[in-house]
Image (cartoon, rainbow, N blue to C red; front, side, top):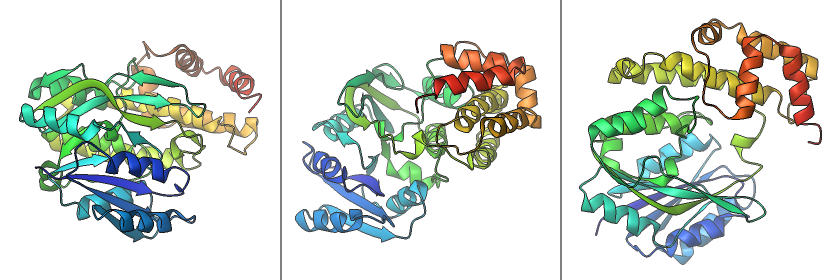
Length: 339
């Protein structure tokens, strides 16, 4: 039986970790190792990891200084011994047959990866199912390029956007190791990992069952104000440029840079007006105007008229293109009035 390494980064997770690890250790597919990476968590998460390891010899725990989710996942990849890799976030959980089903379709079709749908679970317990990256089926290089790589590369505006959800795939560890695929940063790191992995994968099997449960945690890094967002985004673009050069991706999506910068700008605007930003609305508006004057953003605004987005993003993009920043600020003041 193939060994699956399940990597779980752990930080301030003591309220969720048991549910997460129980869902992994009670999988219908038993031949797995669970790698808990304690990322210098200041609560009792590290001690809980050790307790869980004492209860099941398939669990290995690694304690490290806090370095962020990317460094935690990279340590997990370094220590993993399995034939296949799965990632699970510490506040999420798997359906009981998740690993068995993903491995079954992967092996049945001699695939390099398999994927599934997932369930978004809100804090009040309500949930919605989100479709997989591609419809259920088996895909070769051409469809992987058009359906995964090109969408991650340049199709960052029109709905539906392919999100960088690394946890809804089962990966072949050899492909990751041979191509030195790693994570970097605390935001958008998963998008780049997926992009590079699927530049190297030749066969992908997809099932439409929601085998992963994603908990919408309001305290998650992806839902908070990031004061250094633009620095993070610039580094993301540097890494993306490097992947485009190494894998000759420009020919697939000539406007990838402008589309990605537009998407990054819209996130920057939303982040700037986030309730957690302590700056005044006057200062927030000033920063947003400055973002639109950056050379790469000016080029994106001039070259691409965003289409096919959700209603709110479409309104924001229109206000940016018309440079109606006062109205933009009023819009966000109204939106966040009770937050």
